[in-house]
Length: 192
Image 1 (cartoon, rainbow, N blue to C red):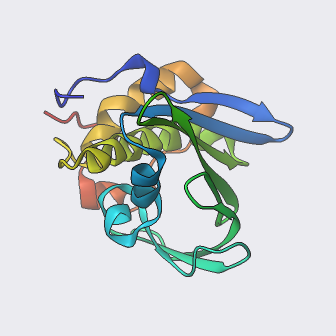
Image 2: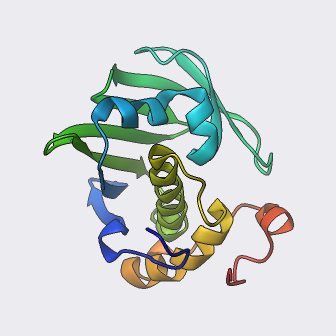
C-alpha cells in the first residue's frame, strides 16, 4: 500500500461462525520470508509498532501472559500461550478470546499469514475486524521497514464502515471501549 487511503479489498477479513463462537479470518501475503515476518509477530520491538497490547511473559506453550493496552483505556488482562511453533504458528488466549497466527511459505522468498481471532460476542465483529485490519496494515509496514502513513486509530476509522456493511448490523452492536474517543477522537470522525 502506498497511498494512505488505499484499501485493498483482498485485505478485508471474513466473518464466520464456528459453533457458538465467532471467527474473524485475515489472509495477508508478504514478499518476505517466514523468519522475517515471524520476528515481527514475536519480537517485542516489532510488536510495539503494530500489536494493540504489550505482551508480558514467555512465548512458550503453556506460559501465562499479561496484556496491557498502550493507551490504558481498558485494564490489563491475562492470557496464555496455547501453541508455539517458531516461524510457523502461534496461538494465544487473549483474555477470553483466541488469536492464531499461521505462516506458510509462498513462492520464492515470500509467505502468507493467516490470522484468526475467535471470540463469543458477534456484536463486536465489525469493531474488532476494523481493529485487526489496521493492525495488520501496520504489521505490513513494519515488515517492509517503513512507518505506517496513518495511526492505528486513523486506519480503523477508514475501514470500520466497510466492516459494518460487510458483516451486517448484528455484528456491529459494540463500539470502541469507553475512553477510546477521549484518546483518539470521535469514532465517527473520518481521518484525512
